[in-house]
Length: 452
Image (cartoon, rainbow, N blue to C red; front, side, top):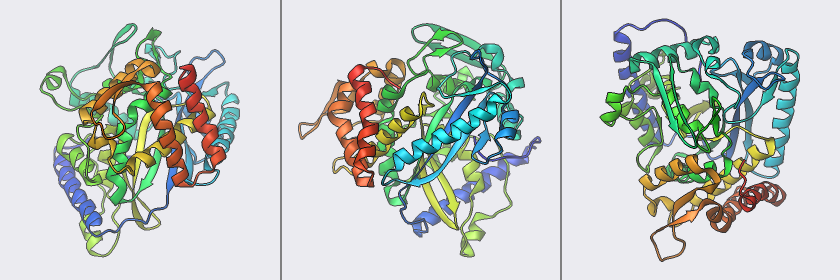
């Protein structure tokens, strides 16, 4: 969920000052892009995995502070709910035996965390929504004691002006009213980061958007909430409704939700940050002391803290990220589509498929986003969330015939996308043994029609 912020109220001048600072940050980003100040390509990727704490009975344990104290590692952080943790895997270069290396690092980290959790009668579980959660678990008293989460909770509810309402209809229907954003804590995901140059950013982001549906179709594992069977992957509607600042009247007016698929293919990373400012009021109007344009004028690299903080409160499924490392700015695409787990091999197989497929699609001569409308990509995502591996998706026909066809997701993946993913991993320089092992898991899911 991002950076630490200080608790406290806001006066009426704060949003005005913050809005002005945001626009200066956006101008600074534009200058950095124009002046080509960004880091050279390093083919770096990274992983974050959100986790659940449970007891021997499988029920959630509200004790992340105690477990984190025992883990005592900067690789593990708190998350929104007291039953949540997050593990961050250090960036790796996408080459060689990187997939096996990642798997080993994740297994080691999770085994260590699980041992420490067991000292207080808890354990670690990876899944998109913990199926044993109940309504009384997801209340404000069970939010982690972190200023940012308290502020977000207060600001989202204040912006909405009423309690949050969940209404998800799948195999069964769930309706539920919450006086806090705590239901969001039920959603635990894997976040796949990919550092990209500004010149490649639009192609990579567009490719990532286009493949969200197949990611969900193959990776769905979260059909249950509060004992109800909903969508094959119920996290996306739950997350959207748990962060929705719109009262029903604003929905009827077409105001965009903060958890957002988007509405168009892009030409630059700048497009996404500019949309954030144009469409979404600030939830956390907290200003940093840095003046980004003055830093740029002095030859420095600004942190653009306000831009980053605001970006962290717009919940895109593929989020643009601006960062500074070793004095150089860089851009990343943060893919937030996949549920956590259920096993380490599943996580790495999903990552291998994503990184390979995005690389291949981003380099196609006739890119998929020139042949598939954005509305079709958004509809595919919704269909995949509802139906999982049984989804039928719209996808451009191969060859020169043109047009878009409806194709079962498993057939699309086996016949067209798996070979592309393999070629993409080859282009990254991933060893064939790693490529074949983890893409083989994806192929088996398609063959057996069982997802991860």
